[in-house]
Image (cartoon, rainbow, N blue to C red; front, side, top):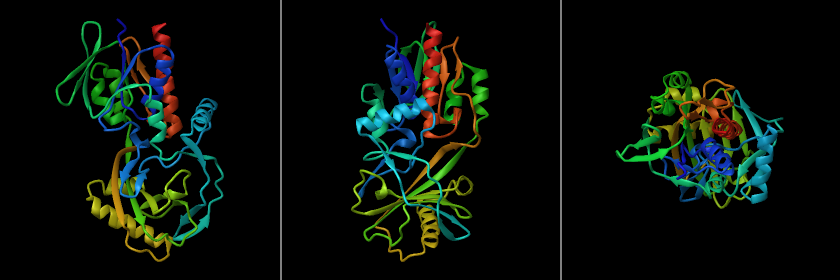
Length: 328
């Protein structure tokens, strides 16, 4: 009997590791506490269609990731997004000189993780709370008290603060991961029946509670019947207001948005707030992935590298490579 490998977390890092392991002929079982795959690449369903509340776009610099993006593009789940970009500083808007190529999932960001997970065995709505080793194999315990296993190896692909308690069997690894600080982001989506009279489609913001805003329907493949905007607050503002109610967050960020756009703004027909508790690492690391190969425990995630989508994908590849090499 082939004993499968367990992967906890179905964000880009976990899915990337799973695909690489599957390609190398290993059986893989994935677990995630969410109802769908994708982590911060997931999209939220709403009355005005799907909205990308997490990752807004991504770039590709490493040749391996460039090749992967080209495959996604050929499969029809990714397209380039070339928004009319602005910078906002001291309340003044100016066109952004930033010309890097940006990619988005089509028709929504979650199209990418869904395509990646198509051939994978996934158990969703299942929060793993403990990872423990029997005589020979690993077992996972979930929040309902159910046990899953046996597994030959375990890959943990969740944000560092969530990974730490799962690493009780590897204290040295747990200590390294526990040292990683991650920062929150409050995200708000606003939809308007009448399009706002601004040419802006994306904006990097300074000196404001806002860090970033984007006009969702400027992305390829979107519906566009309603003018939908996604606002991301700065890490500092999000941290300071971490326990604010969703209604208060919407009020604050809507106000900052109205001030910045400086055009008539009707009341939104839809407003959603979402708190990403572990949106990005506070500092950059160059680990690739972390491992206790003798134990059979591997850890990956965007926080092991750049904090970007590309970093998540590369970290998953690195975890899989190290696991495969150890088994050879």
